[in-house]
Length: 74
Image 1: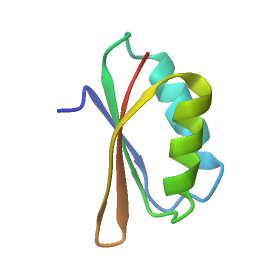
Image 2: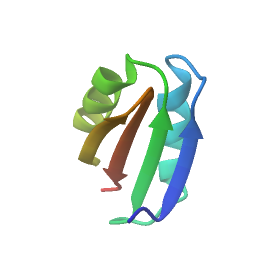
Image 3: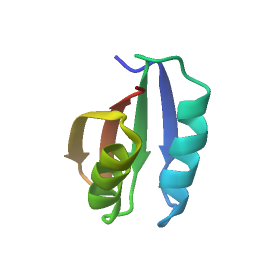
């Protein structure tokens, strides 16, 4: 279960990543951020973001038009 949820629905690249980066700064190491996005490009964006920042992408799923990501802060 996520410690915080970020609704980035309706936002296009790079806004979901920018907002996620800001939200992750408010979390402690080991806490989980859930991001909900409608931007199809966010699938590749969040994978790359986690690889570059060292945060762990716990899950990536799709529910209808919503892309859902769970990111564990490093």
